[in-house]
Amino acid sequence: MARDVEIGLPGGGRLKGAVARPEAGGPHPGVVVLHEAFGDQPEIRAACDRFADHGYVAVMPDLFSDGPRAICVARTMKEARSGTPSRVNGHIDAARTWLGEQEDVDGQRIGVIGFCMGGGFALAYVAGGPPGVRAASVNYGMVPKEATSLRGACPIVGSYGGRDKVVGRSHAERLSDHLEALGIEHDVKVYDDAGHSFMTQGSHSVGKLVFLPMRLGYVADAAADAWQRVFAFFDARLID
Image (cartoon, rainbow, N blue to C red; front, top):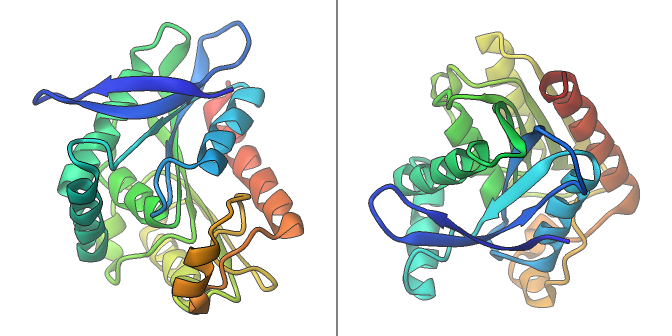
């Protein structure tokens, strides 16, 4: 089970978060897990556990924990909308650094996965070519309009819901087109019967109403296929 952890920040301060580890052995590949706009939720910790069961050390930084929560949420959402998450990128990099320093992790075999808001952050982060990051998974995350924003990114596997009218098929097609133009290896798929947040089993009744056009909700068949693709993609690049 994922357990609580604190991650030091270069300029001082600490992020809360969670880490899940395989039972034994190592060094293992590592993965940074980036949560949805709902924050540190049980379903995101369950994603960390899923990676640990598969032989990865997984860390989830709580991007809303660097100070008073309301201020952190507002600041993080502003960066998500701007598409230039400089502060958030620093937090993600602190999590990657912390992960790579663990005795049971090979810091040269790191992946990044993000969901919803975290998917957009994952995309922005790996475009900077962070050291040791060999693969990324972007799930229903927003995609920048300009392909040049993704220059230098690692191979990417992405999943989107066809019923999501906000961050669905149009963003999937844009991501695929950008990566094709840049010559970056990728696997991007749209699941026609799924909406937003279909890969995790969260319960967000208010969110489903507020974000009605996104058609939030877990879809078992689509989730199973998407997770299979994530692990096939990551394993090929992170497990020697």
